[in-house]
Image (cartoon, rainbow, N blue to C red; front, side):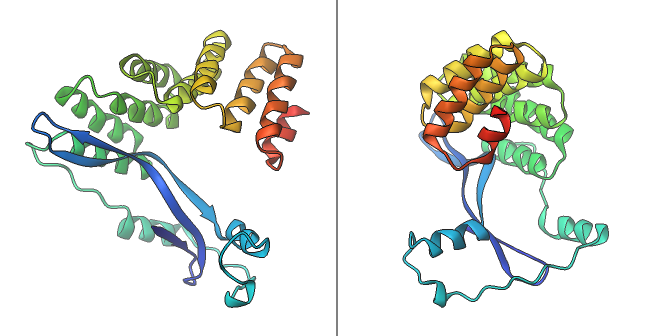
Length: 239
């Protein structure tokens, strides 16, 4: 587990998980790949759970501070990046896992074009590894290169149609391309694979809104509310 601290060393967030994958080679050996997004819980949310009694902790056990954190400068940010966000170029004989992890590090550091180059190296080594196209699609989307993102994500779904998040981000790319018909298909597929993710219903509602199917959009927002009535996105988009 990783934690996030502010400039004064106070806990402000907890990293609870990340998209990981285990890849086996022909000899049965495996390596762990770090992919895509990671999930962080803001400390305020954690404290809210403690107050509600949903944790095996008592509020009086915790020392909390509410004084604001001093703003950090651009120089501070650059120094943090230099110390923490380091990546090492894989060796010439490195395999898929090394290049995937390297590309994902570059993506996290905001070096999207370099990340794409690393993922292209993975494709040279294994052109049928679907996770590569997913990761590449994310890197392209952060560069707002939506056509390339959609192409990469579509390739991921063709190799392996099972992961719902391939379809979600494919649909997201189609929204920016204003290809709403394909976006509907992608989101419908994502929902069929993971019907408990309320965000999918919000984004599908947004697509239907763009198509001026307002009643259809409201229906999807209502389904999102049934799954998670506390999230502000739903009500903002439903207006």
